[in-house]
Image (cartoon, rainbow, N blue to C red; front, side, top):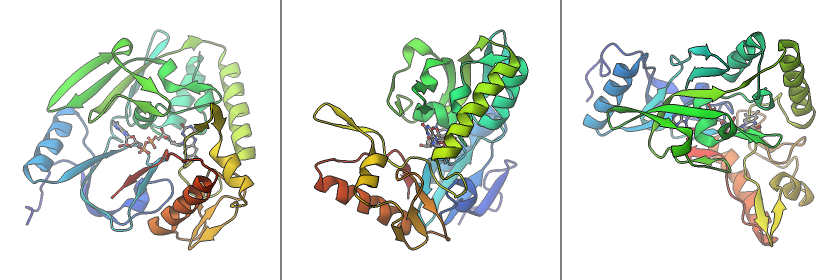
Length: 294
Ligand SMILES: Cc1cc2nc3c(=O)[nH]c(=O)nc-3n(C[C@H](O)[C@H](O)[C@H](O)COP(=O)(O)OP(=O)(O)OC[C@H]3O[C@@H](n4cnc5c(N)ncnc54)[C@H](O)[C@@H]3O)c2cc1C
């Protein structure tokens, strides 16, 4: 058995519902969710988890994470306290747990441009960096100057030329991202705000933002040198609106699976598998963007 205050004074919730740590509101309970406040606490969390043979998972805003109905028998690490945002010239240093909505508010206030494309993505800067998230032809990698990561008990500052990014991929492996430095450029605050809102309006038109989801479930793929957009293919196959349990392939955007009525991870994954099987019949092997945690 674990001792009562296993993580000493570090903020911890035992048997926490993972529904609260994923934007799709699905998942069983985690043995522990911990909220370290500084590097020393991050170090302690990993040390204690390792000493007790507990697996770990770092969560951002959970906007790309599907937790299992069976929960997570280990330690989920939330960096919500790493949320400071500091302006240094035309750059900003962001704690990995900084929420994009908060960051955008500051960028508008400071008149810093280049990141407007991401307005409306319900993510943290750490999750965005790990996923090399992007939209409207942009990716976070374009703006990254350097990152500070934690691995094997040590901090490491990595400059952009030592980082590798691909489509929704970056070479962080088991590193925990703690801070990210973004290079932006000066602009009039009202222009930054205008572009943010234009982008968000565009998203509202095309995405089912009124339901819990994980955004696009699948990555773009290729067949015979042609780009295949999974949402378009799934739509063409007549799968829009198909429901399993409480999950539905969105009627508005076939790339989204939405939680319409207390969906389970099984409902969600059964729909994902259905789309995969139907697309495979057309010779397209879909590749998942979402992270499934069991
Ligand atoms: C409505 C909606 C719209 C979306 N639109 C887009 C879009 O336009 N473009 C796009 O690319 N994605 C989009 N997404 C998907 C998602 O927002 C992105 O993948 C985002 O980057 C995930 O960030 P997060 O903080 O929620 O990370 P999480 O979902 O919590 O985690 C994602 C992955 O990153 C890892 N991770 C998180 N934080 C850290 C850290 N500090 N250090 C190391 N690893 C970490 C996690 O372990 C996990 O593997 C959308 C999702 C939703 C729900």
